[in-house]
Image (tube, rainbow, N blue to C red; front, side, top):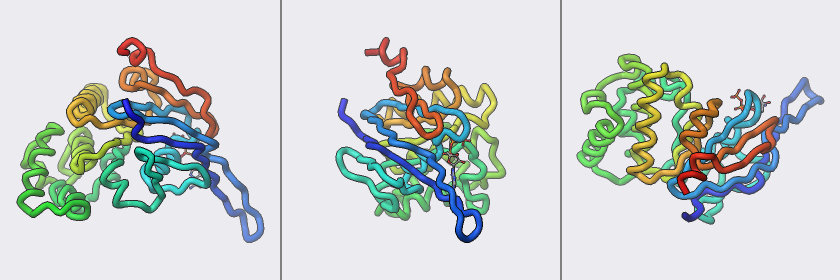
Amino acid sequence: MSCLLRAEGLTKHYTRYQGFFRSQTQVALSDVSFELHEGQTLAIMGNNGSGKSTLAGIISGAIAPTSGQLYLKDHALHSGDYKTRAQTIRMVFQDSEASLNPHMTIGKQLHEALLFNTRLTHEQRNELIRRTLLRVGLLDEHRVFYPYMMSNGQRQRACIARAIILNPKVLVADEALANLDTSVRAQILNLLLDLQDELKMSYIFITHSHEIAQHMADHILELKDGNVVNYAETTASIEKN
Ligand SMILES: Nc1ncnc2c1ncn2[C@@H]1O[C@H](COP(=O)(O)OP(=O)(O)OP(=O)(O)O)[C@@H](O)[C@H]1O
């Protein structure tokens, strides 16, 4: 299986200014390297403040690393390269309510993703939205819903629809199951597994749960204070191969 996403020595320093002359440097990530292969899942784990969100931000392009480089199939990615990232790497966050625009219907939000990133006609966009909503277990009627009209689980499905509608190669799920109750969590987990199988996506799964990481992932990368303290293949993956 070929390498899709490669991180080499990702490092991030934040500078905190304390008054006019004093500043303090916070090392959020230090020399983090990993490889993500096509169709595989990498789980990123670690305690609060270990650097998981910073790493997710660098992968999505929202945060520029202080040093180090991310490659997508040997093509160096740069932060601010939004067009390439939007079509190849998509995020799903923990808080579905905050990640959707409360003033726009779900259909409008999906239309926008297509409008900015594809040359599809209005009819083609409509058809793709219909198929994507059904694919994530929603109904075509949900396109006229505003986020507040939906349950937590339905909103997370809408976020997944927005993430997969551009047919990305990598989906980054940042604690995407954390806010859901147990039965909904299992449904969304199964949906993500089905989508990965069908669309051949690679996943980066940021989670606090060892159980989910062992179940979902091929490799686990564990961070502590910004450093990689463990990077290993999961038992499930070893048994599979
Ligand atoms: N914008 C910022 N400015 C300064 N320091 C920051 C900033 N963002 C994060 N940090 C610091 O960098 C370190 C890593 O933070 P990060 O949010 O990446 O960790 P995390 O593992 O995602 O934590 P959590 O699970 O609580 O979200 C922490 O010490 C945090 O305080």
